[in-house]
Image (cartoon, rainbow, N blue to C red; front, top):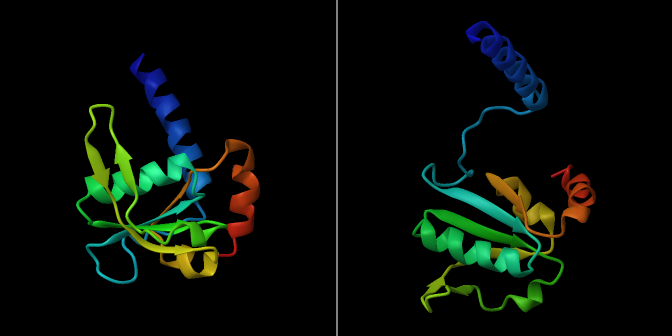
Length: 130
């Protein structure tokens, strides 16, 4: 059994190397403060709003949250709020909001798609150059 597990693990590691060969290990830090991580949320529906509040709130501001949306004018208030079932409210902070991927993606450590799954491929293909 141990030999079988080692063979399977070896195959899995080989597959991981294949899938990640185009990535370069630069660490997870933006170009600014080395202790700062920048997460860019793409799409501004319910999931994006909730993620914006939770990520900033749960990291106590250590992670800066950016929002890439086709309608940035809807986000004049940069402090999204989430109400939990117990009535507690958590507030986050959007560091930047834009519809221009060139303004947000290059400075991102993590890009998180919060839109419909059926659009994922199309959206990331458009963002590939950034």
